[in-house]
Length: 113
Length: 120
Image (tube, rainbow over all chains, first blue to last red; front, top):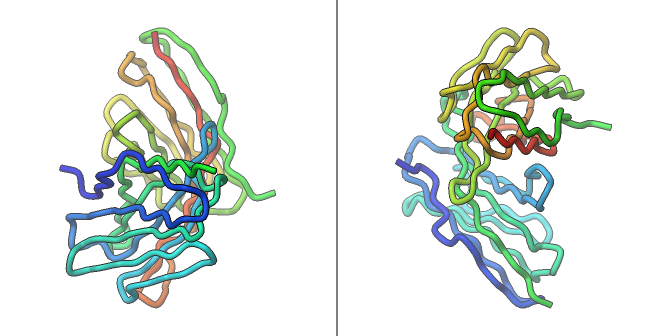
């Protein structure tokens, strides 16, 4: 059973507009969430994270929103740039401290100039 | 430069021929992990290690072995590779779990560049 779900395998957005990537999770023990970005032929790189005590975390053009009651988080990129085109992975971890990261399947974002 | 290195980057082999993919990090990280990435399946964890001599199974450990004799190295061993192990493999490392506002914070994992393995 997939504990972290990214239901949109791909997303196309015009340059300058907002990109919204969604992630749902099923395990209520997850308390920490991360977004990773991956370009072809490279390893994933950390983008932004959020812990359960917050509902929003912002870093420049990137904002992550967490809705614990809905077990849903989203990544907003504003404004979107062509260099943002990549695969974005949502990941979650539990409070036990020994729980490894669980990744979603990823969403491929294409920002069109 | 802080980094995670993997070798080889590309490997084509045949069924049953033992192979090892090396992973090394120079950041003194305690936590290391191996993932495989497959189309439509995202990143799935194979094995992880919280510290030297401590290893645990991830989601898809079958057919793989690991060892953590030193802090910096975490090799992935395929004793008898099969075609279903054809995949893109990533090694990652981090400081692990650290105290933070939420009681703990999961430290950012740094990923290696990947190893593309083809088993014929």
